[in-house]
Length: 466
Image 1: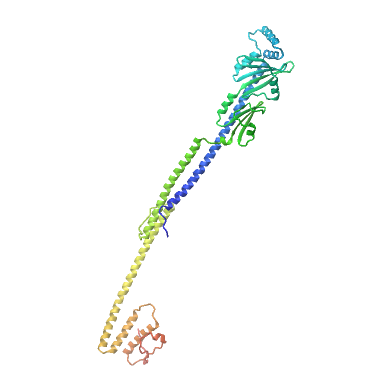
Image 2: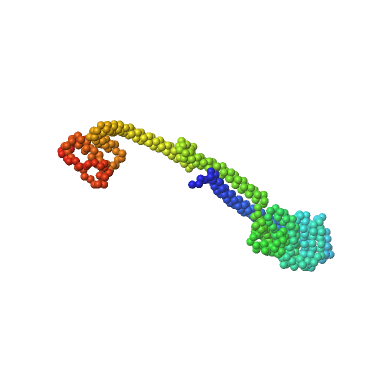
């Protein structure tokens, strides 16, 4: 069996856990990038809503200012009468009307329409122009700050644009109010207030990181739009996030491309990526440290096992009570070594006792062998002296003694018959001529016996033999 390399477990666990950490960190990076994009999109949506509300409030404020000036005109009878005269009289007749009223007034200042317009310019810096359109002769008067008036212009095109709702100007907030004669309630003309809104709209756009602003009058082409794209296509495009507010006859749209609004800045992206890399690096270092400790404990266990294979059972592993599985293995390993060492000691002692018993058995066999050898020597001496009868008796005696120390627990029937024959011969020598014996057995048994006579005549019963 091929042995594994010592660091194979370390590298296997290290790369496995490293892959897991990288997958988790990558998923977290993707999640945080996605969450940051959603948060950026939500932030830009809030900014877009704020810009839309601010633009609508600005347009409402300009309309309210126009309404205030319009209402203030009706609150002042002298200014309203002057405007009605301006609309209905020719310039010379209006001049005489104004002088007559001033001479009849006790005030040092004449409160006419021109005075009201001048005060309006002073009160509102955003007010760029005031137009007076008379229905009687379709004459248009343009009024500018610093008492600049341009009367006598043709107002037919202006009147046509007002009737069609197309009186807006680029970057301007235009408010039209009709002038009615209180005595007849007939419409005698229009007063048109024009406010400059381009700077305010640009300021609102600059305050938002993403977002475009468009202002339309009666759904006509925008009077203000920073993006040169087609507004109608943008409103139908699902990739754009669009908000809408209405203010009088004006419609305010704020919009942005969702993909661009959800983009992260390079600093945010690099911060998330850098955090992910640092987290992955710290995780890998911690994993490497933990796996080194783990594989170190495993190597200690393997080293102890190798010592046991060499026969050293005295090795013991350190472990903690209530530890992990490796501590349980170490504890069981120590217990196994202790039990194995005890078993080996018991087996060794038992083997020693067995050897001692064998030695004692051998020692117990020394005396019989000495006796056999002595009897054999006496037998040979008797034969040498010509006393064969004594030699024969000694031979039978030696054979009987040898049968008492069996070489095996199981002997053949032929061997047993031979031992019996020697025993009977001893009795024959002791009691000569008194008995005969006969043993009959198959040839395959007798062929293993010594070639001797097996026929003896029994002359008297055999004495009891112990």
